[in-house]
Length: 296
Ligand code: GDP
Image (tube, rainbow, N blue to C red; front, side, top):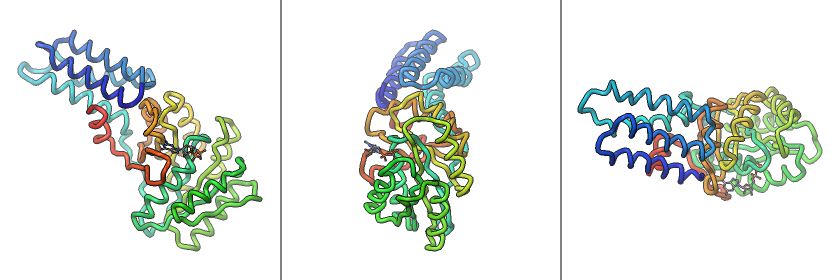
């Protein structure tokens, strides 16, 4: 189920509940069942769905609500706040500060949109008056440096990489040294994604993180991957301490489950979403407006 459908299904369930003459346990139960089904069909993990259901029930304990309270409203608010809670781990991500050098490392599987997103992120902060720079620490995939170069050139951001060097940690450190000298206040490190999860990739991420000591590690994921995001995000989190998530391809078949799973696995917030192939197709992610929009 794509994300928009998830929102529609939940709003429909709430609307049906609202229309009932009396909101009793049975009506609430039906409403929760529909919401649960919609979340599961959107690939949200069972454990997460179970928590959501329990939390809503807790907030909306019908027995304890005084007569005359607006049960419909309380149920609607409980659903809204639970959806927000699923997307908000309660811990804000590191935010770069202008003029104060920061290092941000990007991790994610090949094809997730990582290289494009590095350039989008650079361009976003450039627009805010930063002096960003891009380092290609992917020595695994032929063409990775050229791709970063192309994106960096489009974004008019300085870049660093090598066709010869095979040690990603070494290139990353060289890039850092170069751009520190040039007073870049936001050094962005793009890393390898290989083609699947494998021990060597995670070991490499650990090495690059250790060598560069990033202020922030961002996990980039394709919004349409669903539950697989949980395992991926967790594996990256274990090798480099992920502190934020960017979900790409939200213009496509994103189903919501992926983003929710990644937040649950990393206990880190989504900070941006990618909404297209162009560098400007990039939005700041804000939980409450996002959930409001989702529910229509
Ligand atoms: P990487 O292998 O993770 O570095 O991924 P790339 O940056 O090469 O992106 C893979 C493909 O996804 C490219 O064709 C990108 O243009 C495309 N892409 C990246 N982000 C988005 C997005 O937000 N929306 C859409 N539609 N395509 C995207």
